[in-house]
Image (cartoon, rainbow, N blue to C red; front, side, top):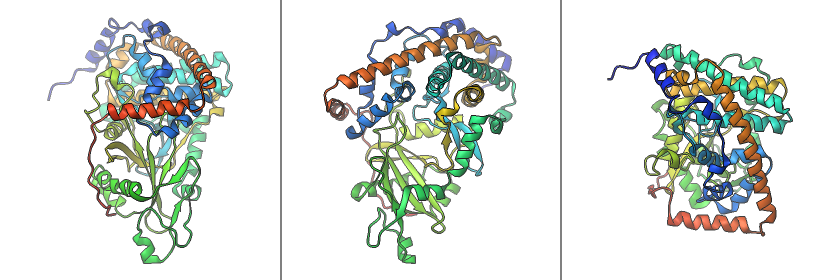
Length: 483
């Protein structure tokens, strides 16, 4: 085992990286460096998605500049790769923005606030996450009606919080950092409201919101031993077109069969708990903005009686949008596993049912669906709420980077002055403006497009995906799930 560097040595290494990329140079954003049209990058990212759902993704992106930003990770990943970077790598969230931090239930049942979306996670330059979250604060603040000066102040508050926290983490005992929790959450109004919403988002609430009692004689996706034992009618998923639709036949069986492979990715004690649940029904769900068009299944399971539901989300994962710029090959890893391991690296506590599986050659993440989960309401991101929330975002992102990277090197690069803060704040403002221009280009292209053109583009992407698959096809032997 090699001898680790001292704290002073790691800070010195970080300071040395300023010669590689000056802190002042972080401010640079030059649209003329773009080699690809952002709308073309978006169209390419639709490759392999369900063609009929692609227009829904574009609709959500067209709703506002912040909506565009949420769905345009491939655009920003490309933009960030155009210039130099610090070379100080950590685990990236990859899609760091204000609505990808939120509350969820930890393994001990307590509510925690943390980054909660890792579809794009990958190891890369720490500042890429910082730049994306900083730009999101400006776009979200504008959408909430905050004044320009307040948006700038919020960005600087976020950056100061990130820098200050990173210096604290660099000096902290290793295990103290591993156990560190962000405090003051209940005193920050937007976060307090998130925790309140999460408190009400229980499994029983989901049972009422997502299911109905199955009519007599109807068939569910699973052959339930529970029905045979009790003679009662199980509940089934509602149809909420097009957001939630039930899945039947071979596809439903393939989704249920994938639980066997998924269970093997869990820790033994959690596998034991999962085995006490009986699957009752399967549905297809449309979620988020960036993920629209990818395959997303939900399984409704019942444990110790009708008041013990469990909802699992089985979400398709593809290669991170940053992978082409960081040298990761599609064949290097299971994409669901990539997300799980990135999430565990950055989070203080993770979903106890977090795992991965494979269905028909595609990689999937598995987690609980909406169990005590909540995100910030956009209307809260104005006035003092935006400043308070920005400060929490800075500390939370710094903790994730410190847990999975080298806080000493990052702190050394940042320094104790506000030079890095000022540079990133300038970048964020410029990039927010660029996002608004890109959004306007999307609106213009949609208004001038002939009917059906988006579906036609999606269909061509599907053909390209078959010709140039993003991953090697895997075979999964069909197995009936024994739970």
